[in-house]
Image 1 (tube, rainbow, N blue to C red):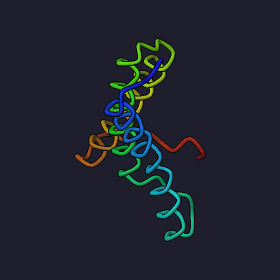
Image 2: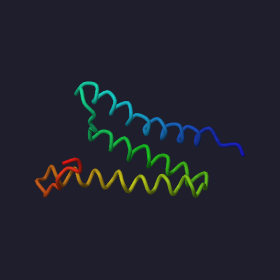
Image 3: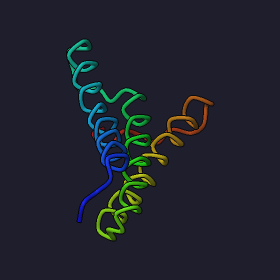
Length: 97
């Protein structure tokens, strides 16, 4: 099945956004001298996942749709937790404590 150029561009754009999160995380970790996950990681995750979800829906691929939708919920939840923490909400103890 041949995919129109527009939809290929959408798929590649989503993959590029999704991949940028790893480059951002690597770059920020190198600058910090330790492993960090910047908030931009989650925004790139949401953006890439949304675009890839649209592409997966176009392709009617249930495996791809489920994978992107599930990840999207996790990324949005992480942003919600970060937002709550920044507003001064309760913060649970770290897992490695």
